Image (tube, rainbow, N blue to C red):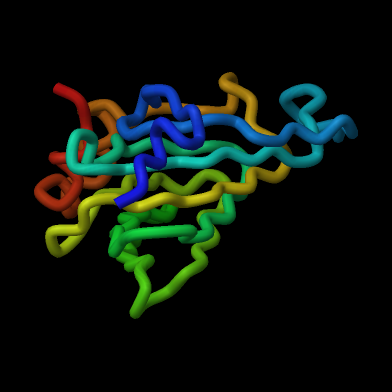
Length: 154
């Protein structure tokens, strides 16, 4: 198995797993929250040491492309509280769009040793547009508490 963390020089990610930003557009867009690059992109890796990511949301749309490994499951929640599960893997989907404002978390499935994903964010990622879920978010979606608890700190 390739050591993607070393090969791609990935760093620990605050949501779990590892990442590295690989592109930020030099072209800015005007948004209600200030200027943002028109697009940005990262590599994101889950592996046996970091098999899942925390529930979080962004204001921007994010496209996820499976590069290697899997399967990974993405758990997403729309603002109205609808839960979706999407598997990215060699025998499953290889692409997923998570609209801005939806909550998302991911984890390895079925004994997968790793999952390497490229993410494209548009408008580009800005930390002020990012939010981790708290226990209060679980209170907003009581019908999903059991399914989401493992993806929330504390």
